[in-house]
Image 1 (cartoon, helix red, strand yellow):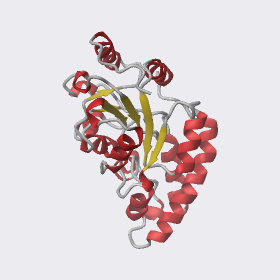
Image 2 (cartoon, one colour):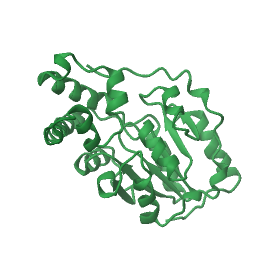
Image 3 (tube, one colour):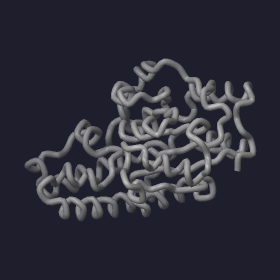
Length: 254
């Protein structure tokens, strides 16, 4: 069973789509799951079936709401604690097994978020620095980036597990700034979960939220700069055109 698409009709809850405050733009940071590719339905399906098999919640399948509230965007350490509060080791073994299932599925079903390659070309054409910043395990992250044809696009891959604290704490994004040698004043973040948006905002950067699967009202609670449906959203391109016209993109940053 696939997680359903979210109604994005309320994405206009945010207050505008300007990025002029980060002039000149030097770097762009991306989450992976749900931000580069629409993988939440694959994660949800794997969790749902595997939890049902072991009799979690009395054998009643988890709902999409449960998945969004307790699993989406979170690190496996935290997911293990939620699902198996009295047996953390079992929880970690379960999440490892689930990731193996996910990797098998994603090879056949990965889909980039609409407009992704148009946007990555815009970034490359301007020589901006870029990094992927994720709570996902390294094996998952590298596989998804490779399947999307972005292995040569990213200058760095930052894992939550390599930081003292994972998202929603700012540590992974602060590490990305350090690795890329750019400042938060000239960098923006793209995220699709409450946990991720909170991390980007806490790191001091304007964070654009994608309503790939999570409700706009929920994402707005994390205080994103603005929300977009995908990378073809006119709101994004209006903001990028504004930067171009004002000469506020630092070309040749790499």
